[in-house]
Length: 258
Image (tube, rainbow, N blue to C red):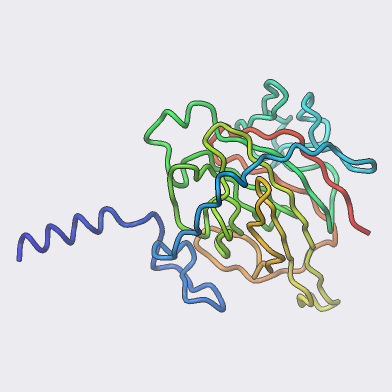
């Protein structure tokens, strides 16, 4: 019996990162950040290619490779944007940032890569491996994370609708290589009484592979929770998360939809 107990304890210690005591995600059998939820398959490496599309005419360039403060301001009333500009990339530092301008429905392109040195640090894995996020309307997150080698709970991996929907594929390029997101974002709509009449939706192509296909957000993004929709403005800023890791972004632009 003692040996069986030790084997059971050892197996438990090797369980996947995640939780089983969180709320169920509506319409699914899975808990938020469920450690038993299957991992998406890895995309064919031959199909993965970081797209470096230049901003088209009429686009709003959110980062031009030179000035991190031109289109962004710091979260929580902090003074000044502390993100570093290095070799044409914007490197996350100290606090989150959000756009000065507000947006509704958009097409968004950006490229990002994992933090320098993390690929050589065995302690950097799971949610601690180059964690960031793109927050549409500062509310609805698309996860940024390096899952090239390590795994985490499926609804918190790269290109997940955080806490809700894993991607169709793990489409990460190798660590420290650039990844691209090409995103179609549709904002939620509310009636005069604050009831949601159409939910937020997102389509994401990562490195040339579709990983989210017109998927609805069940509500705002949150850790270990399923908050309900709450009425907000038709247009709000885009946020970039600082989660303690110096993740890098470049070539970020949006096209507003009419």
